[in-house]
Each structure stands twice: as C-alpha cells, then as structure tokens.
Length: 423
View 1 (cartoon, one colour):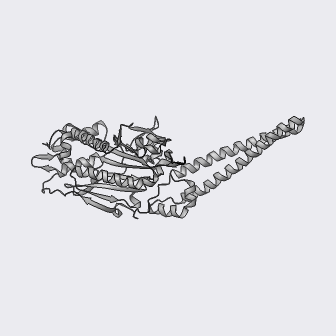
View 2 (cartoon, helix red, strand yellow):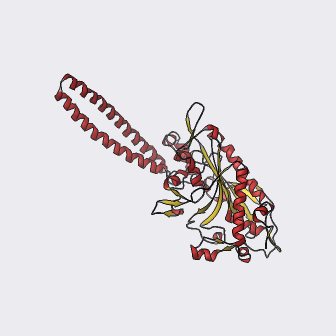
View 3 (tube, one colour):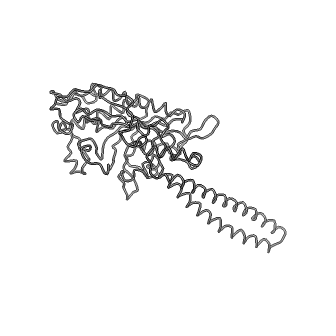
C-alpha cells in the first residue's frame, strides 16, 4: 500500500507510474491528498482543543484552591462543552481515516522505472530463452488426449464431485503430481528455503495484506459464513507469517517455501486456453517467498529468477523468461518476470511461474519491519515466485516427452516417480 506522504510528495511521478500500469482510476490520487488534508486539519483542531481542555482543567484546580467555586464551576461547564466537541472531532477523524484507507487499498503498487511500457501480454519483453525444442511427429497428441490414453486424470468424475475445473488425478497421474511436489520442495529447501505447510484458508486481514483484497475479491472463493477465503496461492498465508512483526537484521533474508493447493474462480475464462490442464479452478503449486532489506531486494529478485530457471532446466523443458510490461503486471507487483514452457503438441507457450518484487507494498500493509544499527525501524521488501505451478508443467512434460514406448520421465524426477516411463 502506498503511503499518503509519498503520494503527496511525488504526485506527478505517481500519476505517470499508474498510467504505465494502465490504472484507470487516476482521480483517486487527488482524493487521497484531499482526504489526507482533511485528516490533518481534524487532527490539528482536535489536538488544539485537547490542549485547551488540559489548560482549563488545571485552572479549575487553582480556582478551587482559592475558594472561587463559581468560577471553577463555569470552567467545568466549559470543559464539558469541549468534551462534546472533542468527541465530535474523534468521530469525524475516524470516518476520514477509514475513507482514506479504503481508497489507498484500491491503488496498485507502482511499477519500477525499468519496467517496460505496454498494455498487454503482447508488449512483454523476452529476456532470454533456453532448452531444446522437442521434435514431435504429426500424430503427436495434446496432453488431454495423453491423459485419457494413460488414464492419468479423470475430468468427468471431477465434474461430478465438484464441477468443471476440478480435476481428479488418479494412478500414475496422482503419483507424478506427488513426485513433482516433493522434488520442487527438496530443490527449494536445498537452496536454503525453510519449508512450511500453511493453512489453505485465510482471513480477510491476510488477503488484504498481500493485495488479493480488494483487487481480486471476485476471483477468490469466499466462505461467507466464517468470513474466510480459500487461498489463490501459498504466497498469502506464508507472507503473513511475519505480519505485525519486527525481524532482526541478523535473521535476514527470510527465505520460505510451501506447497499448497490453490483455488481460483477464473471468472471470465473460456475457449481453447482452458482445455485440459491449461486453466483449472484448483491446482497444486510450490511457492518461494523472501523478505529482505530494501537495498538488497532487486539482487534477491535476480537470485530467485536464476533459482527458478535452474529448476525448469532440470526438467529438460524448453522455456523463455519475460519481463512483464506495466499493463500486464499484477496489482501488487513492482517488477515481475514470467516463465513460460513450450507445449510442443499445442504449439504454444504456457506460463508456469511468476517471480515478483513487491518492494514495500505488501510489507507496509502487513507492517513487516526490521531495525537498522541505529535502532530505526524500516519496512522490508517482499518477493515471491512459483517454484513451480504444476498443471502446465505436467501438460508440457506429457506432450514434450511422448514417444512410441510411452511418456519419458525426466531423469531428475525418476527417483521420485519410481520409473523412467509412463506406459
């Protein structure tokens, strides 16, 4: 969340950055400044009245000591009148602060200066590409046909149990899911990330903290009876582990990883892009999250990008890394790199990871801080990345590794899966 003081001091810069992010409600910037002016005025008037009341209260004691009861009673009446005014200021101040906070929650994070301009995915910049493109014969199958052939996922029973977009993995399909999850977690913990198994539902404070609310409210599954939300990513509960805490400098950087199912309504999704495992409402993902000093966050971002790149390389998948343009970034991100793997049978790139630096946008909402050597309290920066999201990884593994003998399992996964081929 941006701070009013920053918005006020950098109004033109904020407006330009929000335009770069294709934010439409630019009038909110001036509303923030106006409400902040109102808040300051109310606070000043309230403080002045409180100071006056304290002065008059002291005068009452002095008058009583002199025996001037009538004068003292008049002062008491004056104090009582001030109390009503002070209560009125307090109510108006609380209403103004609530209105100000509500607007601040609706303003997205600003993109970093080096983020390219653009309005959609077509404007993203390809940073680099790696891996070897597989050669598949003309009769090669897309993953949804391979899933049927090898009986890996039962979409129809998933529909019966829950609804469309909730796949039921079975047999070797379920085993391959488990193998991928365990491998991803082992890869992350070996790199120094501490593993967590977080709750799969969160309260609204947690969702506001990471920026899912109010921005993605319509995309989250909401348990209204208990005012809880199914998580869209493990980023939400894991980052909130340190909400309202001051982390010692000696404990930084904090590096966390977690597996969780993820739940997304994906409202408005339709067409060929949602076929098979391309886009589902429930999927498995392993996440990495980092908290670090502001001066080191972009170095940390680069290290996380390299970490995810090596993971994809180990799966022997062709991939490319994109630097997202302002218009294609998430609400909370200051800079995001997307990873896409090539799905040879579909002949298209599939997004499998986003690695983002949120700078202090999330930590300001959650009050995640540290203290420097002088004892000054500073906001940390938060980062996260998919390491990795499973459905499209599975789709690409199946399509790119199909052959006459079956589906080849990448060497690094074979100890986890217990076989070299799905046949």
